[in-house]
Structure formats: structure tokens, C-alpha cells
Image (cartoon, rainbow, N blue to C red):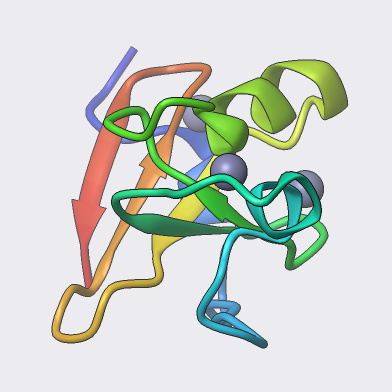
Length: 88
Ligand SMILES: [Zn+2]
Ligand SMILES: [Zn+2]
Ligand SMILES: [Zn+2]
């Protein structure tokens, strides 16, 4: 398999966060460290450094493999399924 993955290559317009908060943590009153936006459905959830790891749970449960960083100044995509990272 060449570098990259078809999931990341399929992203033409990067989805950005509607709100700068983890939708699931907000419901529970929990905290998060960094935010990621799902490139399939647009939901913004917390990263793997956060206690709840909502973004990776969502990726596995929903088969939405690619997230973008929702952090200011960060422009990258990550595929959970293929462990591929791409700066854009
Ligand atoms: Zn992939
Ligand atoms: Zn969360
Ligand atoms: Zn999704």
C-alpha cells in the first residue's frame, strides 16, 4: 500500500468545527484537552489525550475514519483506521 489512504484522499473540503467544544463532553459536564472534527458527519469531539476520547470512539463506532484537528493554527487530517496523518 502506498503512503496515504483513500479515506484522507477522499476529503476535498475539510470540515471545520461548528462550535469549539466536544459535543459529548458538554452533555456530561466533562472536560477535554484538544478537539477533532469528524470529516464524515462534521461532529466535533475530544482527542485521545482527553479522558473520554470521544473522537476515536466515534470513529470506531460509526466507521467515520478521518478527523481534522479543530485546534487554532493546526491544519492536519488523521485516519484512525489506517493510522495516517496528513498536513494540508
Ligand atoms: Zn484510511
Ligand atoms: Zn469528549
Ligand atoms: Zn462522524
